Length: 424
Image (cartoon, rainbow, N blue to C red; front, side, top):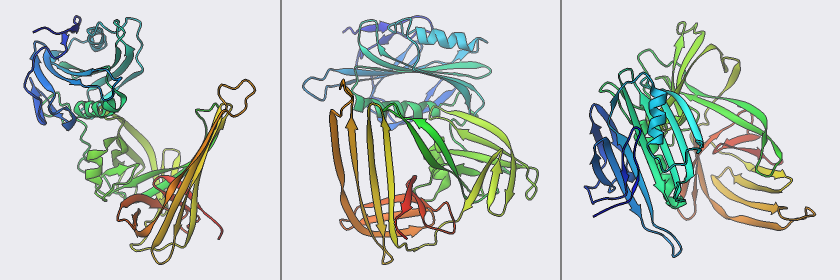
């Protein structure tokens, strides 16, 4: 039985599409020499083969529509190699080993950095056609320790868009879990002894002009937040169930750990380690630090304390979140309205409208439309920084909630969006 060879050479794994039916991949930890990684559920059932240079996991995807085409995805984890002292050259050779990529192909994504274990890491993404004209997306990863070099690749060929996102996210998780040495931990943020000391939510308003997809500029006013726990974690998001450690295991790119330097009451610096992406890159920083009763200053940025709402808190009013983008090529805008009453009831509605002037010589509107979201009504509960909406049909939704001005509810930040109170 034969298959189609896609290429070999350089760092050299020959890629063969499902040459034979190997054993299916299973979840859990996978070992390759001294290195270890966790196999995400999305790869369970893929064909697993042991190649001369490492492990290969493959899957063929059947078309989902009458005009669709068969697709395939290949995941390669190369065997560890001794450190060459020329990691960048070795990484470039690994990328070239997939010789179906045209030589002039430039990476869409090219990032370098450091892992939580202190190793160098390189991340590159390439697309969009092989030499044979097949639609392709490829991710290449290189990790270098003092004694070894490790290379991983994900290749997707003719896969459909809805298939690609979970595969890419699974590959991120796999790389994030990669442990080159027995003592490594992968992207598993954990405070060290002596970390921590802060508690609660701090926020600041950040304004900026930002270009939009229609060729215009938008003025935005966003709330940057830092939620600290005393044990040494912080997050820019809100844990769904209030468990910071569990949240940071599940969403490491929204989290970090921190250490205060200079003593409990006289700390004058803060050191932070923060997740940069799911592949395991982290950033490390050390900034001047000071605190007062209701504020923290990190470097030259000041955050103000935001107290939580009491359990069972009630509101009375209507809040609107409006958004819009506009430019020479068109516009889109809409509003979401939330009414909360003292008896614990809510009403939620909204709509979106758009127009496009593209394709018209005189700039007149050629496409326009509007849609409204069905009105929802039910009961709401408040607990700390969380608003839970349970509609009359029994569906429930939990949203983050805080008021940047501790003395007023004129502005509520709900689910990360600014809601302004109407009328009084």
